[in-house]
Image (tube, rainbow, N blue to C red; front, side, top):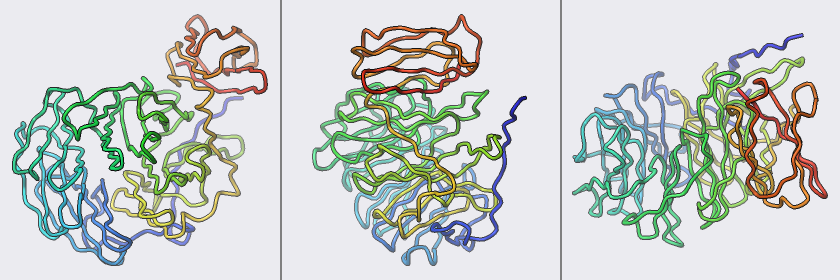
Amino acid sequence: MCKFIIYITLLIQSTALFGQWTVIDTSKTHSSGVLFTDVHFFNDTTGIVVGFLDANTGVIIKTSDAGESWSKTTVNSGLLAICFPSRDTGYAVGYNKSIFKTIDGGNTWIYQNAPVNPLYWAYSVFFINNDTGFVGIKNGPGYGFLKTYDGGQNWINDTSFFVHHAHFDYRKSSNILYAISGGGGSKSLDKGNTWVNYNIPPYTNTSVSLSFINDTTGFATLTKNSGTPCYNYGGLIKTKDGGQTWHETPYDCGGVWAMDFPSEEIGYMVRSGYDTINEIPIFIQGLIYKTLDSGKNWHRMDSMANYNGIPAGEKMICTDTNTCYILGYGIIFKTTNGGGTISTSVKDTIKDEINEFNIYPNPNNGNFTLEIENFENTTIEIYNNLGQLILKNNLIQNLTTIDLTKFSKGMYFVKVNSVNKVIIEKIVYH
């Protein structure tokens, strides 16, 4: 008997159904078609959200009362990212190479002229201080990105280094600047003058967020369009050595979107995934997960970031371990008590096995790599979806390449047998 994957939209009519996440009413300041893309909070009450209606219409809304009311500024370019290195000075970037600067806490904004083609997008921005900052450019120019050392009076189009600049993060304590994109990562120890590059799991092509919880341990969410059997496939990747190596906590289907760590131990993420009702997989958008142990275990929450059929997850930011915001299409979700409770109706906990067992890419084209730290006295067995053993090998190194192309496409199970543990991972060959 065949099982059909059913895609459903959750229709929620009341904010009370969100449990511990409430929907902030911003309807007086913008059209419902606005996509909120980034947010910055100065403290518990004052914050700024940016977004766009289209490429030529950007929206900036500001609150001073924790989202109870908002003031609005409209600019002539859609906005994609925002950064405030100090309370008064901030930068917003977006379509048409647009860079805007404020020196009064976001009340007024001044256009900055950037030395690139107007067709390019400015899609990421990060400032170490009021004067030193970086802007990632999409659709060009080459491998370059923009940087300034005088608060935007002059912008330098730096093409001297290949920099993956979709997202930035800065560790002030050690003066380390990190950057990442779907193609890889970059790292600078001298405030962006020189860079070194590092690899990330090779199957990814879109970077969604980046967050370092200390000088060496960081997380990034990445996703790709993979077609059948998954429309979107996403994973959370983690480094414990300052970006030199990254490992993945994989998910079968669904994209991993927003993510933030307000402390070293506590983190949140939003993703799409599957639940099972009467043995039928149901695709759900806007699932919220929380970790209490630095990403070793992720627990699904009772609440979801989904309102009237519209999921959120474009961006997440937490001002402390209990207060977080999630952005979406005309929607802002907020919690003030850590997101509520762990789900009791759905036993959904994602365990981080990356220290000992990692498979990529997954899904794959029949070729994949098995990475394991302790390979001594370890065997690998692969079973088809009928439970038949089709391959068995002794591991002789940390990285092992497996070729399934002589077998039929479909679902397989990889079983790793070590001295004191057995781990089983599902993979998809399509």
